[in-house]
Image (cartoon, rainbow, N blue to C red; front, side):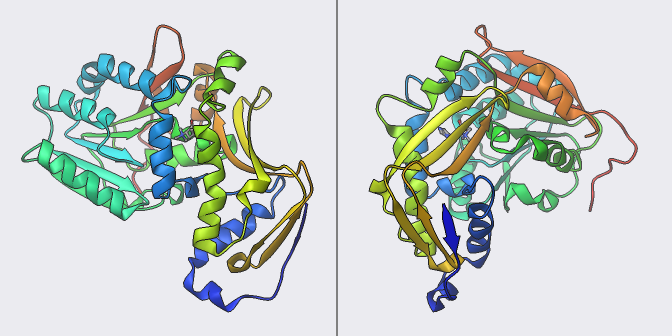
Length: 332
Ligand code: AVJ
């Protein structure tokens, strides 16, 4: 695949310059990739909702069932007054934790942190209606850039569910966990939802559903580039690919050229030429084991306090707690 840089286009002024820069960097990488956070425009959110109900996509329903079973126990261990959700919505999963806090007479406030201000507003309003007297707080932020906007912790349960941590390259995970640790005080908790390494057939089926919803979700990323960066990807020229890479323990998704095709992304000052079979990586979805998580916790100031899995060991909730007092005070 060849990329060249045509002259800057004047229309670039109306697009998100930061996004254009990220896309330029990631398409120039090896392998060329696109940032997965851009999957979630209105169409992408709708398609992802649909994915969560597919028979092959066990993740969401398994995590939900685990939370139903474990929420009271988790809340009892941490005894938080504030629930913070990273990358959030007024999801049924969040409500299971809020309900458990309410039953324990601990619930005071809920903070939602997300990159999408509109989605945050809808979620905060929904929560305020469901939990009268609940203090809700919204923080509009890209969680990949840290959590400074949260402010100091204490009696806090931070949660990062849905195996979203799996979207990070493994080399980024310890730094990201340290950033989360910086928002916690001793006694606080961090709850992670993690998809687990398992039978390859089961994993690959979850990302290659028979109804083709994941394929549409994947190709929609090119549509997002067309819409937001004035690119001209020919969606018909690409096909969905997803497979489990056993060496890295991740599902990799790609869009692969069915035949030779070109795309201009004026806002990113890029012109791409792809031959048949050339691909763009669109997502990593890392799969964990208890041991792989524990390795990634080293040096983060977090320790594993509870590891909760379903009967089939498909998915896990990992409750992490601050492990040391020194050198880990929140950055203010
Ligand atoms: C929302 C990032 C957890 O990796 O399983 C679903 C996204 N990608 N199908 C995942 C996704 C393809 C999902 N996460």
